[in-house]
Length: 175
Image (tube, rainbow, N blue to C red; front, side, top):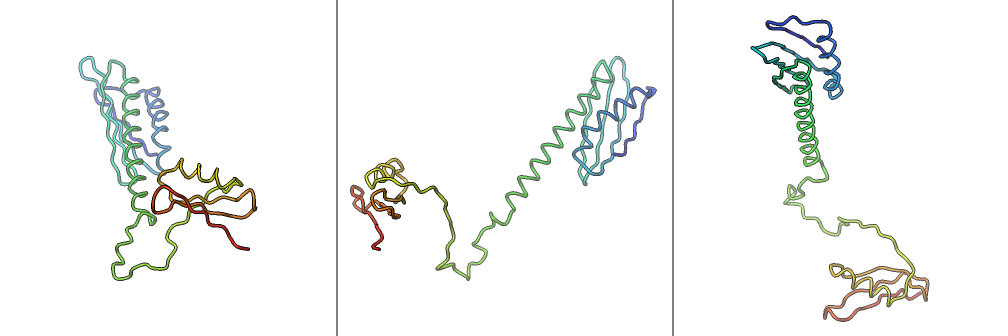
């Protein structure tokens, strides 16, 4: 990170210079290349620190005042770090929303999908009795069927709700 420290009506000591550089390492970890312009000044009893960071085409700025210069620098670093994290989160969210898995399929209005598997679901299949399978299906009112291994036959069965909403059907393989 390129750092430029300027003092207005204040002499920049080696201690302040080292402190600013050490604190800006917290900001540097977010970027590969960044530039920081630090201006330190005093006005009456207030110590004012202004930090301006340019990185990846984004600009971040924080200005605080305190009775102690070191406290003012710390506040600026906290503010900048918050701004950077917020911008990064916003960018990540935008990238996620623009990802290919969320693209609208309605772009192909002329080509309607048919005879395509458009969703795959994975689940555990356990050996239980058909009566227990019916109870499991009743526990999930939004589901219309339940797949299980029949303990009595050792084969995969499906129990499903019939259209009357009161009764159930059992599908078993013949062979």
